[in-house]
Image 1 (cartoon, rainbow, N blue to C red):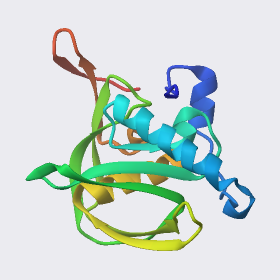
Image 2: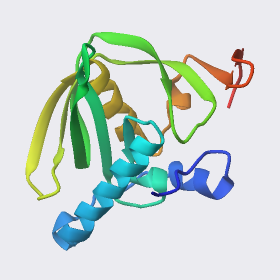
Image 3: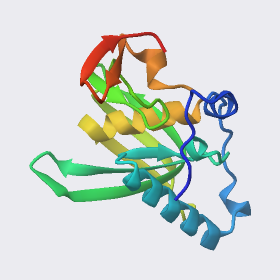
Length: 176
């Protein structure tokens, strides 16, 4: 399991705030990439996350992994994604304001407005181009992870940011 970088650490914050350039998949070892994706998935699941970008664990690959339930009725029916060089090629007018958190910004949540539906292009681990039409939670996770790869965090877009005090379950408004 890998260590997740957090913004409270100056060195780690600079990695999180760096835009990651495209990854040349033709120059990468496919066996090593598969193992790296497997480790990212383990790290994400152990941290109870539903998305994780490579720069969140200190790597400069333009890659994220995500795993979300296909429907709210059946949380066990999940699809796993590993997407290289993701690019949002279309957003739709409908926006939704929902609470988000982030493994790299522990203890904080905020209300973030994002497109309800998007179209994302990228590449799978074999280097095959893929296009995904996503809506709801999946669209939100994809947007959140692409932001990570562009050096942005949810706190940059949040209307309000709340600090969560897990011991007393108090929520306080704060700037991060």
